[in-house]
Length: 43
Image (cartoon, rainbow, N blue to C red; front, side):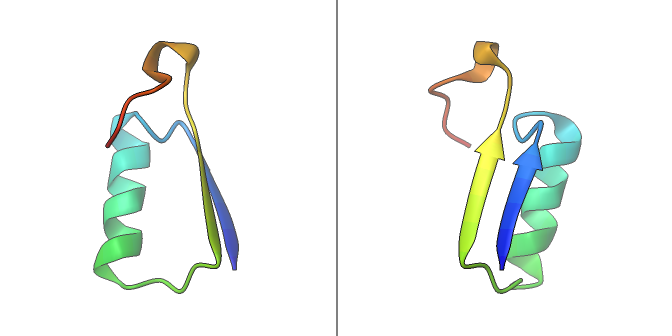
């Protein structure tokens, strides 16, 4: 399954990532989108 998260650097995006990992959601591809302010940041 392909999943994209818009706003991945924000609080809701981070929580969404945490839940995906916690529940071992099967992903083929994960694409993260954030603002230009957070470009190049690692989470």
